[in-house]
Image: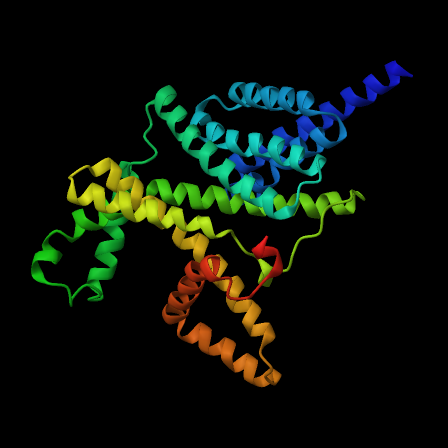
Length: 321
C-alpha cells in the first residue's frame, strides 16, 4: 500500500511539473498567452502543496527552472521573471492548505509578489547585466516615436517653450522613474488574478475554501496610512536633500499606493452605490456620469480610499476589530 501511495505521489508530481513547464513554454512562444501563462503558472504548484506537500512543490519548481534553462537558453531574463510566480504558487498553496482567510491571503500575495519581483530584477542584473529599471534602446525609440506622433497633432502645443525644448528628455526620465512601480503593480495584479483563478479551480475540485467578502466590503486597517507618510517623506527628503535614490523610492511608493487606494476607494463607492435608494434608470445614469467624467471620478475614488481606513466611513463591524 505504501508503494502504491508513493507511485501515485510521483505520478501526480510528474503530471503537475509537466503542466507547469507547458504553461511557461506557451507564455514564451505564444506572445498573446504571456499574461495568461503568468497567471496560471502557480496553479500546478498550489495543487502540489495541497495534494502532496511543499517538498514536492519545491522540487517541481527546481525541475521546471532547470528544464527550461536547457530548453530555452536564450530566455534567461524571462525565466527569472517567472520565478516569483512559482514561489507565489508555493505560498498560496500553504495559505489554502491552512484555510487562511481570503483577505490575509491576498495581502500576503500582494506583498510577496512585490518583494519577489524586486529580488528577481536584482538577480537578473547580477546574472545577465540587464538593468530592468532603465529603458533600453528599443524602449527609448518607442518613447521618441510616441512623442513625435503626439507632437504632430499639437498635443503639446500649450506647453511653455522651455518645456518643449527638453520634452524628450523629461518624458523619458519620467517613464524611467516609475519603472519599479510599474513592475510591482503588474506583479501584484497578476498575484490577485492567480489567487482567484486558483479559487475557481479548487472549487471545481470540491475543495472547501473560506468565503470571499463582497468587493463593497473590502477594507484595510488604519495603519496603512504609514505607507503614504513614508512615500511622501522619502519624496520630500530626496528632493530637498538632493538624494535621488531616496526620492525615487518615495515616488514609486506613492505610484504603487495610488492604485491601491484607488481600488479601495472604488470599493467604498460601490458600497454607497448599493446602499442608496434610487430607481434603476437613475443608477444607470449615475454610472454613465462616472464614466463620462472619469478624471473627476478617479479623484473622488482616490480621496475615499485614503480617508476610509482612518474613519471607517462604511461603519463596517469587521473594520473595528
